[in-house]
Amino acid sequence: MESTYNWYWLVDGLMERGYVVHLANTAAIQQYAGLKYTDDHSDARWLAHLLRLGVLPEGYIYPKEGRAVRDLLRKRSQLVQHKTTHLLSIQNLFTRNTGRAMRGNRIKQLTVADVDGLLPEPELALAVKSNLASCAVWKRKLPRLRRR
Image 1 (cartoon, rainbow, N blue to C red):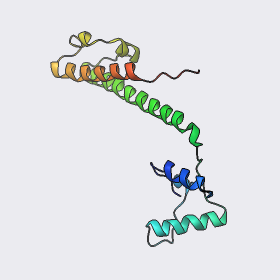
Image 2 (image 1 turned 90 degrees about the vertical axis):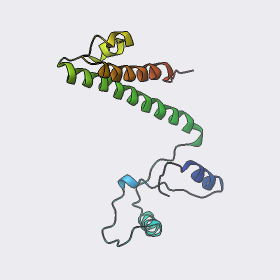
Image 3 (image 1 turned 120 degrees about the horizontal axis):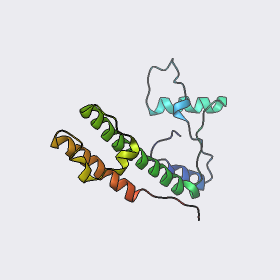
Image 4 (image 1 turned 135 degrees about the vertical axis):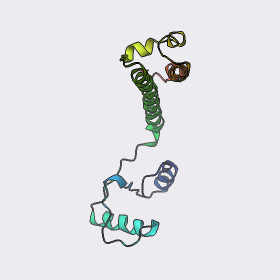
């Protein structure tokens, strides 16, 4: 089977019924150049052919018991990326409009009250305040994982 965003339930159901499941790593599979059509049927035949030849690149099927923690770690990583995007947005906006640089640690210390005096126009200050509000949410809500 090909990996999609919703494959857990299908893999679990098949494995519980005794089927051997192979999760194709689609990013590592080179498309056969001689294929005239690509649809689910031709893709399935091609994957079966690679499996028969023993050259099917496979993805790891993470054990059901550990998926919740893995998904939580992925969510935390996504939230950190969002927070970083907001910090970089503030940094870029400030540099673009003032010609001065502001370090990330200084941005993290900014309060909404600090912003009005830093930028030449109120619309720019409002943009930075919006980013700061988002960063404050990420800071409060970002799951902190600790060993038990």
